[in-house]
Length: 468
Image 1 (cartoon, rainbow, N blue to C red):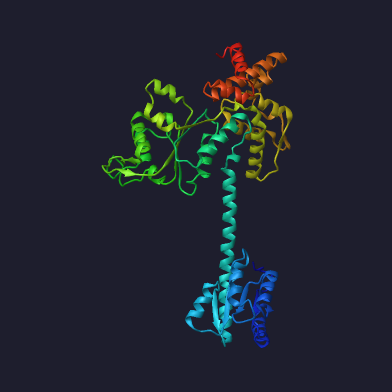
Image 2 (tube, rainbow, N blue to C red; image 1 turned 90 degrees about the vertical axis):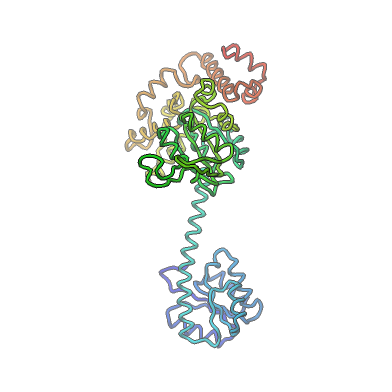
């Protein structure tokens, strides 16, 4: 790309010494730096070495000729942005068209008029500026795509615990599928991030990703948001409104807090899942969409089905694949990874040096039960950064008194509790077994496999801990 501090560089190519001399004199007089070449081979060498801003390229010269040189230059990742002006004695339309097809941006016929040639060079310089802007935009777009892919890849979901590794395996199997996915887990465990990663890495990644929290509106407003409405459907409906299902057509629709949806809306959602059709509020004509649905909830839908609060048929339609996110207290080994991630994130956002965290502060974080899960951990670290002031590290005293009291009371992970080592180990063992049984839905063989013990050993330990 051209440097604003130096003259613009023109590579002038002609197999005639007289022609090269005239080009050099003409362009040098107008402030251009001129580099010359007399053959196709020399042109390519000079182009790759000098990186000119404009190339004036003779067509008829020793092999390779101007057409082949143009094709080669336009095939290079960088030189393709350099404008090429053909110098040709062939003024027939078919020859001119052929030259432009080979990659030339403009042409001047021989014998050329000096003013016309200079004007063509000036125009090529303007084209060069546009090419530079396009190239910069292309590079920036690629970098953005890389950042987005990294941000929403499975690798961006922090965690290396057995439960998280199992989650990644299932995500990899369903990412390119259109089957509905139900993400379950406590508040703050990262359900929306998992949904985003599924979309960003799936076959619909280039289409819309729409998010709606089902608890954000009352029943009537939520119905209008999801399915749209026609003019006059209700007071205030002064025009037709497109629903979010239509916005998401071809893409992915993430329905968060699904357990808050009313029975009436559950019926309409079931219809969309069955055949992709729905009717806007106040409308009479059905509309059809192609949408992949990912839903999430922190409620126990099975219990809600038993109590009649959630439709059984909708539950089974949505729960084709279930992704269960473990609470943070069941994967405390991931806390140091999450802490590092958030401290890096806060430093990048603030532009300030990244702070470290003391061992006793990390010990306290690992000893907390984290009822608010990852969201609570992030908020706690934000508070700790403020409380640390100008100190380069977060100390234990920077943490919330309520968090420290929980950690010290022994209500956190069993391995960190005060008391005899035997009791601590038994407590940790019980929690690991309980967590594995929850993740596997009570499947003892699978739970034993995850824990690396025999099934009979698992059953014996579960009985001894009162988990049977």
